[in-house]
Image (tube, rainbow, N blue to C red; front, side, top):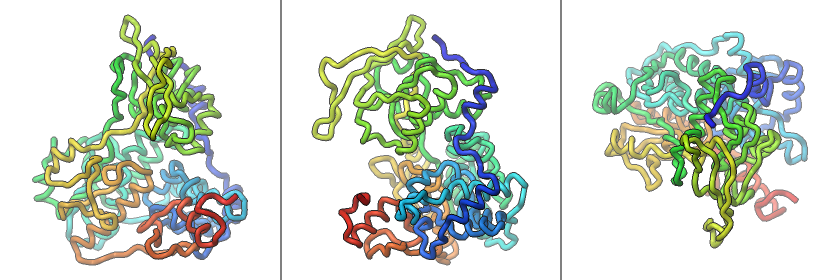
Length: 494
């Protein structure tokens, strides 16, 4: 059967409402006052943009919400988005000292949202375009998190920045690819407007290599930043995936962001193939849009799935079912070419490799298939448009981890095209690093961000410094803690 909307407008809006509603002022005040305001705060180190978290929380506690937002957005221009989409459980909140006391970590993400929402909702202008210009121009390719992070930093340093974006709107993944119940696209678009208010020009619907040549950019700009992200979702590589009702996960999520919710078509029995965070987003949203049965199909076991635990728990609470150790073999079609099901097989892992258990094949009825097995790198586009740029075997642009400079001295990069695919906050942090690298390259002035060592005193050779320069995650801090205190072997406390 063709896919069709399942809910009326009111039901769709209710089902896809935010899973983490904003704090009321009194709630924010109580939560802020739980913070210990650590002098050597591990939460800062765990933040890839190096936000001074105790500082912004202290300002909330003293009713200086505007000052709090200034601290956040000065370090991370996309602080409102990151407050909603960051995996805080494994970043700042995962490093909170409250966990050592076996207490709930400070809800840093929700406090961050409270402060940034305050300035956006009240149209409070925190920043003005700088009047001191350095007389240099930088082209930024891509208006996603990395490009916006780089552009904002450069604009505030006095550079004339132009972003070239092939889509009609900016924000990249934040605008088109985040689960709707986590963040609505309006939040991302407000941040795009904030970057533009700094004096950054964004030329929409302009594709580099097609509408404007690299030679022209090279002639007009002193440096180029590449923040082009990843490409389309990878194909399943099985027969029948051209059937009507097979919808790429990113395309499905984008429909939710660009169409009225009650008009988004969805199946009754949905199969999501893959078990990363995008797969979880697609599965929960299809369930909330009215699908009666949603199955996530993953060829490996539960312990091997790449999705975060809290995402997994959310999906299960929504009624999503998981078929582990299951491999799709074929998409089955009806006479009209619509999806009618899948041929599946059970698997086992032998010597690290997945193999089909002979005789385990079976068929399952579905009317919608959502592949979510990772995105392709922009390798072919990079090789076509920037043929001299060095990329590695995986299609990732080779770059200096501190300056983000590539093999072409004038070209810098950040975000998914430079790291292979990480969090939004990593992309923003890399954009900031690249901005500092570009400044050093063009002006010969090295600008170091603040360095704050971990409270655990990581030894030489281990990650150290601020979250921006050398971000580490909570598990790395934890490992260091137990190894230096002799209370374990690098694993969680018993």
